[in-house]
Length: 158
Image 1 (tube, helix red, strand yellow):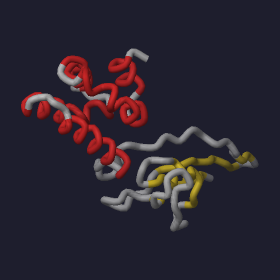
Image 2 (tube, one colour; image 1 turned 30 degrees about the horizontal axis):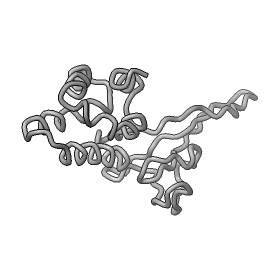
Image 3 (cartoon, helix red, strand yellow; image 1 turned 90 degrees about the vertical axis):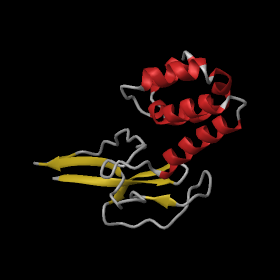
């Protein structure tokens, strides 16, 4: 028998639970920041996948798995609220900079490629390390929180 769960994540991206029954509703708030918890995509209502267990033939799987917090909905492809907040925060940081408008536009265009490994991620890293180098300290915490490990290493050498 397969048992799949959904997870509860707050609008700011804090994982509250990974083992909520599929039909269970959640009407509570994050204990870290007070934001509302969601268990489904705010765009298409598809569930945010959580933990799983497999059992049968006298075997019960009680293992808790590492369940990551997704950046984008696997059903509709839209960014979750925490991803959208990260994208917006990086974009606003660029807007506040003293770069010229062409440089700002160039950097803002690359922001989605910083969050996920794409064919354009290496180019995005190159642009940020050249054009946006002065902004990297200001977006560090956001990037570490939402970007892939390879992007973080490429940008910050860690």
